[in-house]
Amino acid sequence: MTDTGSADKTAMRPASDLLVVVGARPNFMKAASIIPAAHEAGLTTTLVHTGQHYDDDLSKIFIEELELEEPDISLGVGSGTHATQTARVMLEFEQVLSRIRPRVVVVVGDVNSTIACALVARKERYPVAHVEAGLRCFDPLMPEEINRTLTDHLSTHLFTTSVDADENLAREGIDAATVYFVGNTMIDTLLRFRTAAVERRAPARFGLDDKPYALLTLHRPANVDEPGQLEEVLDVAAELSAEIPFVFPVHPRTRARLEGTAVAQRLSGLASFIQTEPLGYLDFVGLVAGAHLVLTDSGGIQEETTVLGIPCLTLRDSTERPVTVSQGTNVVVGTDPTRIRAEARKAIAGERPAARRPEKWDGLAGRRIVEVLARLPR
Image (cartoon, rainbow, N blue to C red; front, side, top):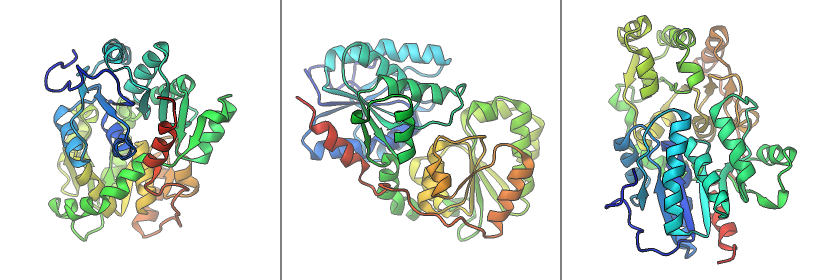
């Protein structure tokens, strides 16, 4: 499964300061500020891409747009059940550790690759740094909540994005001396590439340049795997598209669930409901930045809309990023059609929360992380 050809540039390397793991597309945005900061500090890095993400071509686009070097190692684990995917990553990553012997394993986010690599690393007695630690939505059945909680309790260095995350870790008995409030590396990347994203004029490609529009994303199993719930949300979006055009980049999971359904047929007949394939990072950020309103079940988009000042409706019953509600532009509306309509129409009418950027979301989180890791014994 491991690509030992051109994708593995480390076969002869005896050690590395930081071994950075990415698995799904959001991981690239979270790691993109850590690697250059490490190089500036004189640290060596090894980038491991587990291949968890569903679209290799889109992953390559993200690597190019974020100005990352090609991964040193690509595991190519592919999709599968949670157990299958996690097990494949663990088996492959164990071999990587035996060759690279890093000083620290850096994992980001809350995907299956995150917990798999953290678990292997700790059993092999390597320090683990978890970037984006302490986030909790308090839904114990959500796969990401399981991953992030277990990863935090395995990690030796925990880097948080907000004060509430520090408080969550303290309640769980994690030693405060191992927790560092550094800010948000995803926002580092957003601030770095925002101008380039806007200059690509992605809205114009959909005939929406200088026009108000809403952006919709749906991918979480709780929303797309239950046909009745998915149909309810999309029916509301279709109704609202009569008032403001919608752009809907369709996640492959969502597309598979929609195929052949009555709601898919209805949506395909609406000129004001624009469906598109998943987009690269810059085009997607350009769409978010130009939107009048965003409806999503994604965690990272809640953060991006907060910084960009775009009203965001989170189509979930809870969020692990409460700072985007208390300080940002996010409103958690769940999947109740009445609530979605009411809050969406407020935004369509021009009502916007009086948002402020959360503390330390200033583009310097990656540097703060590296400052801590650079002090560790060599």
